[in-house]
Image (cartoon, rainbow, N blue to C red; front, side, top):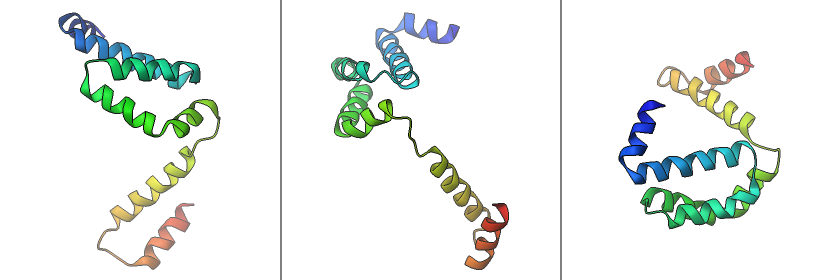
Length: 109
């Protein structure tokens, strides 16, 4: 925390990026959909190229982003299962065929 404070004191762009990042984190965690439009405008108006690009990409996918802030539904469980399957597949790379993979996935479940 002291390092971040020192960086923010040293460079205005870093301070602005940190403030916008903190606002984004709060907005997502607290599901503040009403703050989304203002955050996007502030990020696009910032002099930070990466934040402008991120805000523009969120605007391109505005409806799903807004839905993520307003609904309780997510695909976290699905993503976790896909990640687990990929990990099992990677550990078996070059060792056996589909039958062993199938048995390992079913045995793990």
